[in-house]
Image 1 (cartoon, rainbow, N blue to C red):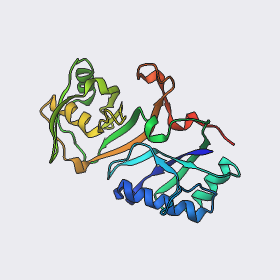
Image 2 (image 1 turned 180 degrees about the vertical axis):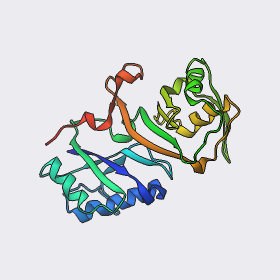
Image 3 (image 1 turned 90 degrees about the horizontal axis):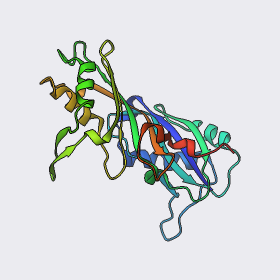
Image 4 (image 1 turned 60 degrees about the vertical axis):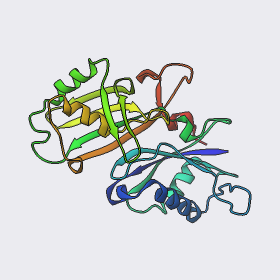
Length: 239
C-alpha cells in the first residue's frame, strides 16, 4: 500500500535543498515508528518518491511525497505521528491512501500554483501589474531567454502559463504554470517576462515566492487545463 503525504515548508527551512529535505524525511519516518517498506539489496532504503522539487528559498503549502507501507493504523494516525517529530518549518497537512497502480508523485505532476509578493515598498516601480498580466496573456508567444552555465536557449512561456492574475494594491501575482518534468517553468521566468514589458527589473532577493499547491490531471488523456487539474492528494482517500 502507498500513502501520499502532503506537507508545508516555511520559515528558515526554505533554504534547505531538496536532497536534504529527502534525507530529513527518511529520518523523520524512522523516528515516527511507522511500518514503512524498504527496498531489497545490500543498501536497503525507504521506498519513497517525492513530487516536483521545490527551489531553494521558496516556501510551500503544497509539497508531496509517496511512501510505500507494509501496514498502517489509519491515515490520521500516520499524520499525527509524523507531525509529532517534525522540526519547526515542516508540517504534515494531509495523508491519503492511494488506489492500487497509481502513478507515483513525481510522474503525476502536471502543474503548480504560486503566489509571488514583492518584499520591498514601491516595487516593482512604475509597472502596472494588472495591465501587464492582460498584455502578457493576450500574446500568442512569450519568448524567454534561459541561460545557465551549460545551456543557452529560448523558450516560449505562453503555452506553459495556465492562469495568471495580479493585484496592484497588494503587489501580488498569482499563477498556475507547467510543472511537469517535460516543461517545468519557474515562477521567476513569468515574473521576468511580465516586468520586461515595461522595461522593469526587480532584485530576486526582494521577491517572496510561495507554492500554493501541486496538481495532476483528473483525465490523463485530456489537455492540461484549469478544469482538468486537481491537487495531488485528491487522488487518494482516508483510511
